[in-house]
Image 1 (tube, rainbow, N blue to C red):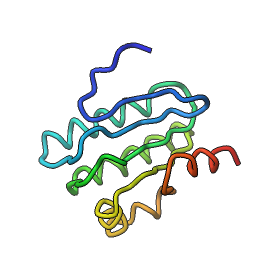
Image 2: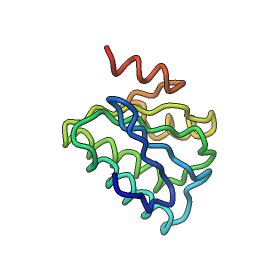
Image 3: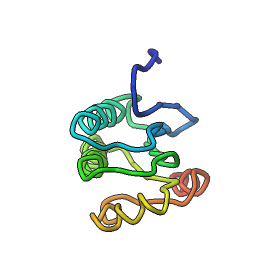
Image 4: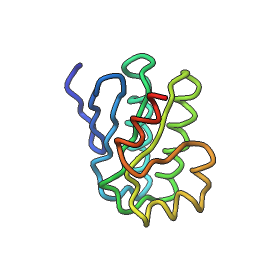
Amino acid sequence: MVADTFQHIRLQPAGDVLLVEVLSQDIQGPDRAKEFINELTEAVCRDGDVPILLDLGRVRYLSSMAYSALFKMVKCAREKGRPIRFCNIHEDVRAGAEAVGLSHVVTVHSCEAEARAAFAQ
């Protein structure tokens, strides 16, 4: 894999899953949100059709545009036929995610191991 130049995420191929780890603690403001959207979209376009696991464990705040980026990522993954799940969402971020209905479009797991087990089923 070519070295990544992402600011907000890190991609880690891990067996039969592409782990996308969000590195930024907060995504707010239109410029950062646009960068975030672009990075997530690029991640979905990589590594063929392996499932994607988005790890939000470091994130403590997402703006409405950043939540929109998550919806766009899920939509793009589905259009490409890639299974996608999220894990490790901090309680503050989870509250926002539930308020915008994110759990209606993607399965959210409490930890990486639980998400990986669900992919395996």
